[in-house]
Length: 93
Image (cartoon, rainbow, N blue to C red):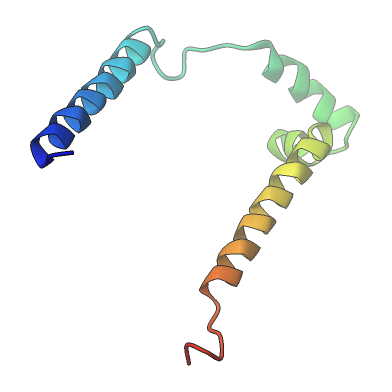
């Protein structure tokens, strides 16, 4: 494939991504105006059910504990993979 063809194809793809982002972001509400029921449920429960006043910690480590554990496992395995890929072997030393 020629360079000009690749540049045109890349530009077309970039224009498509930018168009999707613009269309997706034009319908958003202003920041801070969204009100959801999740905060209304978690705030009272975090004090009485979990004995903590930190609602963020209650959600991350208690209400969504298994989900957070899965995310931490993914983070651990990706860091381990990077460490294994970047280690110095005896052949390259």
